[in-house]
Image (cartoon, rainbow, N blue to C red; front, side):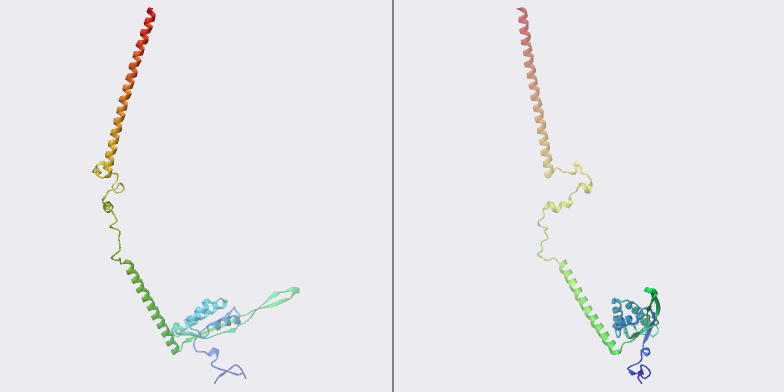
Length: 264
């Protein structure tokens, strides 16, 4: 027999709200009006638990936080008390009833006062198990989604392996540039530098190569310069000797002339 909304009222289809089957969670005396909570409850009614939690987490209303906590409590009751699977639950019913109203007063002009009504509400969320056909469709959809994802992952991995193989393979006609290097540059690693073995000494050089020829030319140049300096020194000495001789002759002539004048 259908339930009645009240004495002498019309018949109400289905079971009463407080007689719905399922696991429930109730929050009483929430400091929020029932009209504000109902706007949020209308969004999650009939939705899966995961979808309902997602909607509430993205909601910008203050009531979404409170309703989300009530929903989590209902799911926990269903898992721990009734042994149900959380992935197979949905929001079968949710409603908000008006609670007690707190009355406050605000002073106004001419000694008057205005009443302030602080509304409260009782929030109820009922979760139940999804029908078998709906669970089957959901599992088939998840399996299809998982297979598509696995195929995409396998394809991407194959492409990565192919790209890696192409990058590491060197073609046969690839010129490495080894022929362009001279023989001296190829054997440059055999040379000993000052930074590797310390300062070089004269015994480290064998007198061969362009450095040795440069040293011989430097020595020859130094010898020629020394010879030139010696020749210049000899020439200077001869010049000084000639000057000395001329000076002595002049002095003799001067002395002879002065002696003749005295005799006269």
